Structures are given as C-alpha cells and as structure tokens.
Image 1 (cartoon, rainbow over the protein chains, first blue to last red):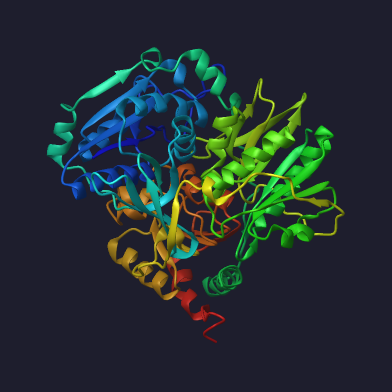
Image 2 (image 1 turned 120 degrees about the vertical axis):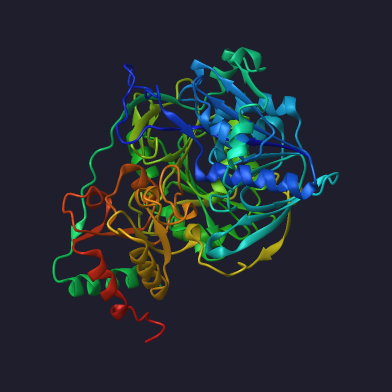
Length: 256
Length: 326
C-alpha cells in the first residue's frame, strides 16, 4: 500500500512577526519549522495504515519556502519513508487552489492508493478535483485493506457521532483535528530521518508551469496587517465566591 | 445574471444559524455592489425553508431537492456548481463549515473561481470583492482581491456577522431545473455510529476548562482537572504550562496545538499569548480569570475577572447544579 500524506510546514515565529517590505508576506529567516497537531494526526493515520497492511510506503509531501525542512523531517522521524518537497521562492503565500494544483502534479507522479491531508484541507479538496479523485473530509478513522479498491472511513460529526462511508480508491481523505494520537519520535527515528530520501523539486520540475499556476490562483494577497486590538472583556467584580457564582450563571446559560 | 448568492445549510435540526449570518453579509455586499441577493438551499425537502430564508432584501430563494437524505459532498458540489454556471453570480457566500469545505474548493477548482476560506469580512471595492481573512494563527489579517475572476466563492467564519432575523421578506421561491440524481454521489453512506464513549474529547466538548502558567505545580494541575471533571468540562493546558513539563501534549491548544470550538472556554491563569488565543478564537464565550489585570487574555475574552484562579475554581462547583439535576 502506498500512501501520500501532505503537510504544511509552519514557521515557529512567536509573537513578533516581521512583515516583508512589500507588506504582502512575512519574514521567516532563521525560523524553526514544525507541523501542526492536525498534520501530525494525518501522519499518524498514514503510519497506522501502513502498519495494519503489514508493509507499504508512506511518502510525505509539502510545498514550502526553500529553507523550510523541520516539519518534513519530523514526519520522517516519526516513520514516513521518504519526502518530496516542492520548494520555490515563488511559492510564498500560495492560496489553497494553487497549493492543490502544485501538489496534484506530485501526487499524480506518485500514484498512491490514498492521499491524506490534515491542516491543508481546502487545498486537498481542490487537489482531488484537479485529479478527479473521490474525497471524504473530517475523517477520524481510515481503514483500507491492501488490494481492495475501497477504503472504509468514519467522518466525524458534532456531538461525538460519526458517519461511516465507503470510498473507492485512490481517494483523497482529510484527517480531522483530533482524530489520532500522534506518536512521539524516538532518538533513533530522528537520527534516521536525516538519511531518508529527501527530494526537492522546483516549480519548473513539477508539471505545473508558472502560467498555469497564475491561472488557477484563487486569491491574491493585497496587504497584510496586524489585527485591530479586540474591544476587551466585560469585567466581573466581587469576591472569588461572587465571581464564581456569576461565571457559573454564564456557563449554564450557554451550555445546556 | 449577476448578483450575490448565499448558500444556506440545513440538517434534520433545521436551518443552521450561520445561514442568517451569511444573509447579513450578503445584504451588505448586495447593497454596496447594487446586485440582487439570492439564497440557495439544497435539502431533501427544501421548500420547508422558503419562508424562513425570505428575509427583507432577499430577492429570490432558490430551492434544490437533494435526492439523498444525508450530506454527500460530490452531490452537493454538483448542485452548487450547476447553479453557479446557470446564475453566474459575482460573489458566492458559504459557511466555513465541515460540509462546505468538503466541496467548495473543488467547485472553485473545477470552474476556475476565485476562492478563499475563513473570511471575517467581505466588502465591495472598485467593482470587485475584497476579503479580509485572519492568517498566521490570527496574528495577522490578510486583505485579498481576485484579479481576473468573474465569480468568487468565499467561506465566512461563524460569528463574523450578526445574524438577521428569519422570515418577514417577500422573496420569490423558485426551484431551478437541474439534472441532479443520486448517481452523482462518489461515496457510499453506510450509516451512523455513536461515540465510543470514554474521556470527553477536547475537540468536541461544549465546555472546556483550560489552565495556564498561573498553575505552578503538578498537584495544582490535578486539583483543577478534578474540578473540571466535576463541572462536566473537558480539560486543557496551554503551551506555556506544557513547556514547564506539566500536562500532556494532546491537550495543548493553539497554533501548533489544536483549534477548538467549545460553547464556553474558561481560561484559568492563562496569559493569552496570541498563538494560544488563536486556538480558541472560535469558542462561543471565553471567560478569563487571571491575577494580572494587564494579561492579554482579557483582550480576547468576553468576560474577565481579576482574581486568584484557585479561589474561584474551588467555589465554582457549589454553583453548578445543572438545570437537569435540580
């Protein structure tokens, strides 16, 4: 079984974000890059599918700025077999449709049985449209027997319920935010990650030309700005006991 | 035909509250663009929602009868796609919901539309839409435009617009002719399953008690976890506390942790670093207790109290007989 899992590398830039001179992107020089919890869940789902199948390959793919590595290395340290990253300066601030288009060319080349997305859910759904793949989103459990042309999934619904769905493979599946318990990387896993195949493609090396990308781009960032300061909380005064009583009233009126 | 199209949503429990927030956004946009506002509802029995969606200012309510009872994203996408091709709206507004995100990006990709998800404002400037969207864990807002796009599909965060009251308008209710049948489904619905039970999961809990660096040791964490359980709340810790080695990573909330959407989020001793606040921004009501009156959490919370978190937390259970228990 071959599984592609697409992740977004997130810069750990703390609270002091610097804007680029054109105010349309942020400066990420020297930042550490990591994966979001939801993407860790998607990686975990891929690894558990491979383990349940008794073998196979997990390929982690990403679209990133050239200096970003840490998030993809995390996926490799956790157990993904190899990485394919499309890295290009022209790819900063890509929108969902463009990310979906760029990754669709990588997925098409890899021809996996399943494509898993986490945090980049919208890009994943767009990718499915570009490749004509069936899709299921917000999934909390995926089961797929090797050789069968169908996967069984549970789509998470509010209130802890789930919808059970069959989807023909190859398919695009987005993993819900709280769906799996991501494992921790071991020291040997981290050491091994550096020796795993790590392929870096420029935009030109994918089958997506810059013109094609411009045509598909769904939105353009005109400007970035800091959000206005929120108006602030209504303050509750009184003794701790009086505060507790008022807080309990507020909670009971909202949750019932 | 041009105009603004709102995609309303309903389930067995009726129309979603967000649909009326979208109509509010659509009314503003229709006014500034001088475009008519239409509302679409796809449902097994859509006509039952016609009167409620007929809000003053809505020109037409378009009803499409779903051939299946449950939500199916390929079918829903086919309906919306066919309607966009027929009506050619300038702007399509949809909820930022799990259902919409399962088909809207695909429709945008197939039709070459402008697309953005998670908007907090949609304005009309110089003959086209301009969308505001929080980015980078809500620490920045992006202003987006859509050069060369005739139609732009935008999903709007819940709570970004105050909802309009339902009904009271004089919209024409019309069922467009679309070839929509169950064979457009690409997945097979097998049934529903209940939760397996066990610990209340953070991502789905209606009430979350969260603690931060104001709690300094493991016995404090344990005591507050016990109080949270007594109150029927899920329990969460901030990144600041995790960095100190207290709590499990699965319960971290924030940019590289989780985004959660409880009805109530009670933040005890949490300073409110922006990356933490972004993880709970969608909570219905945020209540913060902190000894520091300058804590940033008070800027993001709806209610706040400057007090010792333990004194307040220990008093809470006394006031917590739920209506059903009393």
